Length: 193
Length: 193
DNA sequence: TCCATTTCTTGTCATTTGGCAAGCGCCGGC
DNA sequence: GCCGGCGCTTGCCAAATGACAAGAAATGGA
Image (cartoon, rainbow over all chains, first blue to last red; front, side):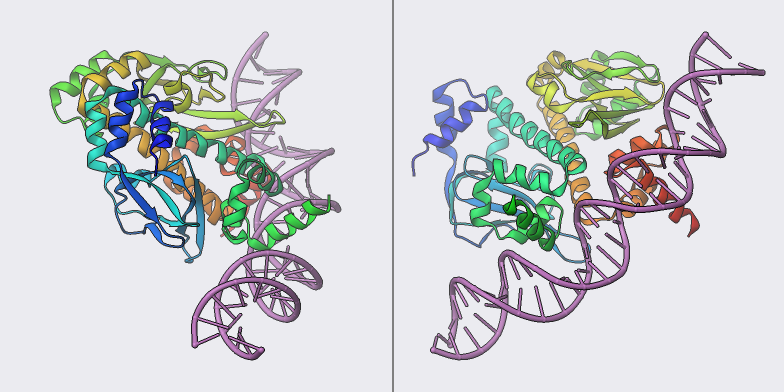
């Protein structure tokens, strides 16, 4: 597996020098996550900062009645970890599970933190990842408030069509904040147009 | 205005030494925001990292039809800024407006970034602020999906009763993701129990 | 104080969404 | 090949919420 994608990702996030990006990329360990296995289970501490080279994953939590609620979909080119658990060393309430066979590279909290403190440009990178995740969620929340379920569905379909190839519709439904029945009806109306 | 609250906040966020916290706190400038005035307007770059000593503010954006949507309420003891605009130096799409007369201390991005790079413990503090904000929003999103409007209302009333003393109900309604009419009806049913 | 504006409530009705259950089709294990 | 479970759809009805408009109450400015 060629680390080009990881190096490019580090550079886009703000790492200026080719050499530094390559050096850091070299510290990541290869990781494979077979389809259906868990990258993170609720109760564990998220300690792997994963750059996903290939595949996709789903994060989910449980509501008070025990139903699964999909909180995020991860795709190739993104970083995968549970923010609170990873940085505050607390037990995760979320699970992260592979929807397909996944491959990528991981680094531990300790290693990552070491690089943050040692390399200023890498701090900017790490912060940028956090900030992008945060504001992505802000956008999603705004959509949840201002858009109809159908609009949210169309947007997801337009922006992340790959998800629909791998995740069952009930996962997508709970991510959109609706039931699988409602999603089915929305899809029906949508296809008739 | 006494900086005790700011110093204590910096320490709780991870700054170990009293002296360092005091030194950093000393670099903040006093700031007053009269009721109804804007701390940040859409189109500007958020460049003040505000520790709010007293008062409360509301952040809001506009949906595609031009309606205001409240995205956050800020209260004393919290930090106020728009994440993406502040760290990525982009124009803010959100407005932040004082609901009451506010007082606190501010520091610019450049100053803050300088301290981040100079003081390791302060980096941990800054990251902790980001992580808490992020996971607070994750919780809110989970509630938006799994809870009814009435449950979200009760929770907000229980956890942030101060908001109800200062924000008009329509602001609270859009924060909860419902119309002001629906909120009014929910309050009616709730008061009859 | 008076007026204009904003806030909040309420009524009516339409729309969206959910809960529940049944049924179909597909896939994997035996 | 058969069976069982899962994923998806659909029908029926109830509940939640929205849209719109009217009116009462509170607020703020001149």
